[in-house]
Image (cartoon, rainbow, N blue to C red; front, side):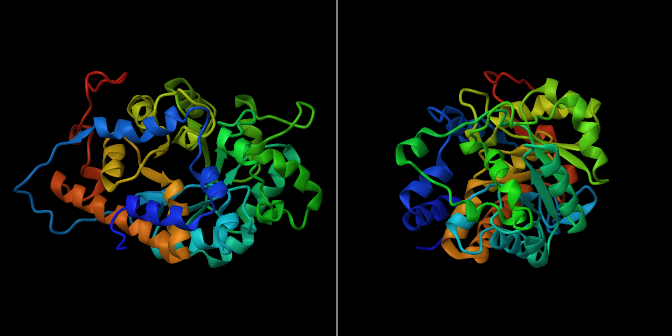
Length: 364
């Protein structure tokens, strides 16, 4: 079939991916209400088109901590890529670079920090799950030395969160496909099992948590920007500014960690209103159309991360499939920009969209 949308890509991918791995990729916490809400709440938003404006020369580019990307969609740091495809994280990095955008490498990568850097042609962030100080210091310094441009600390996995589908399937991860950055330090491999919260099984004695007052220690390890991923409330967003974060990702982990929360898009605008200008705000969870990208930018996001659709593209055609997925979103987003009467991203504003009165967040 011809692939013209992410829905097409998902349908083809499902036919290619083993059912237990598909359930791992697509699964979410408990009843998966938050996962569905992430997509459904985009349907509450509508776009205000504007015409008789010269939009013939549109610029979709933006910057991420000063690094230019061709359009504001990036690849999120989701694990299990090498269990899906032999090239795994290499394919994701290649696809992102081919599309002129950024890739965020997960801690639980089947390929090392250095191996991914060697094939990447676009900017790279390193996503960190903290389990112990010595492992974190090792990973952060490797990322800095390999040319990564930011550390993205995921904070919304304070305890284990096995999915019910995975428990029913007795789904097992192959450790060799998740520990690429630890080949030189095999003694860390047991601890890296902690790092993937989907199957975390740790005791309080084994786990050295991070708290707000320890972010200074993490920032002291490198001079790279620190991005906090998993922010869901105004309170935590404001604390990020107070404790020196350089950016945040408004995200509920695609609904994978805890159920019955607001969708990410519902929480985005009050967060950007509270911290806008004090740090860079990014977004993920539920984006499936270029119009979703447009609406998230209108509510204050600087850029958007894509998670599950990356797996669909990779299953379809490796790096080229990842690029295809991004190209589809780029084309759809470009169309929204034109119909909105905008020539670049800086012209998009909150008045570009309508929020319904029944949302917990109301526009001024």
